[in-house]
Length: 276
Image (cartoon, rainbow, N blue to C red; front, side, top):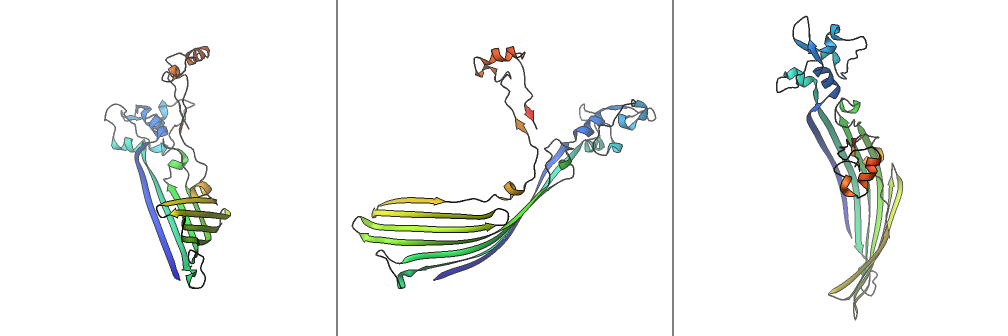
């Protein structure tokens, strides 16, 4: 009899950064600059009360009181202005897995044999815990940047699994039956987040002679959802929609130009087809 016990504990960490992503609201506030009559220098309108109308609202979404006028022409803006209209996107990931298990296997040749030989048997168990978390900087989830407003996410589960496999060497060394083996197997798993899942299979291998083998397998299995599928929160994203009346697509179908014209769309129409 052979046996094995094992234990594994692993952790993966990852930090992703996108540097200098634009803060659109702050950019709008920073380029809306006027001359401050008190200093004679360029300043954000939001910082000069005399330049604001009665219905003026500061467009900045982050630190509006610290607005710094931004010059969009050339490379003339100060570092303070560039810092005010941009921020780094940071996303930290931690993935953990810990599991323990064991396997035993033996051959029954010493006490029972089929025509082809002993019966091979294997059985085992495994207990596994998995967790995953992703934490984003404070600006991204609040939609301050140009990237999708991804929320933080976390998920974990544990699972207990047991399996048994048998190899039946039914025939061996016979005329037109060099080998005939049947391989049934069964596995059951109990997930903390998805309940029980069972899998089974029956395989048959027939070799009429040594140089030819024919294999047939039938089975059924269920897969539990992983952490991303089971625990990720609803998140916004970006998609590209193909506008059929766009000038790049209008000639793909002979009837399309006429249909688009009937809708009042010109043949040189350029679609803005990125949505979120």
